[in-house]
Length: 231
Image 1: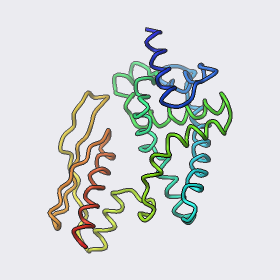
Image 2 (image 1 turned 90 degrees about the horizontal axis):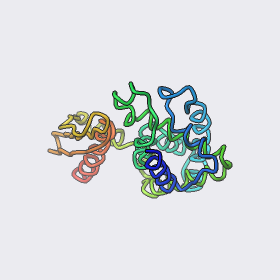
Image 3 (image 1 turned 180 degrees about the vertical axis):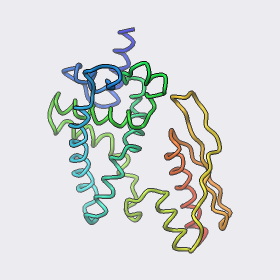
Image 4 (image 1 turned 90 degrees about the vertical axis):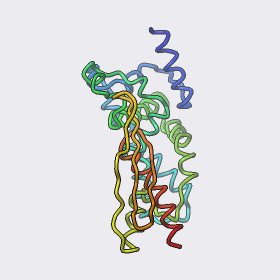
């Protein structure tokens, strides 16, 4: 069992791009308060500040021409719970977080808030294990692919907001979002949501690990189709 856990932790560190010289810091970062009195909340506090500072520096350098207001909105969209939990899922942190029995039964390993907090705690642990520059480098490696895909003409707004504002500009009703189905185990559910815009006969489907992320995926496709249809 311990050998298997070590394999999982080693694989996680490889995905993260950082190997801890003090593995106990990583264990603490992956420990929820339901598991032990020595949990990750203090590391989360530290990691939150490190993440915000690192992301502020990244967007400042990555987008040299955009104004402060957009930078603030962009930073907020990159450090919110959904963005962090999506990153944590990609790093497969749901397989590593240590939870109490109650949290395990209720699907805590896939809960966005727990995943987001754990990822911030890991960043805090990296800072303590090395320094800010190393933590910043890990953040840059995690976020650079996302930054490369950002369209600065969209003002840092999420797809649902863009779609809503577009429809309002056309004096049209807001889109309808409906959950089509959910599948998977209780702690690993996937959602499929449809976005419907009757005026344009648009019906798109989005999938995600939460209803919100599925709605955003469906809204993105609907926005692309609606803006093209109206031209």
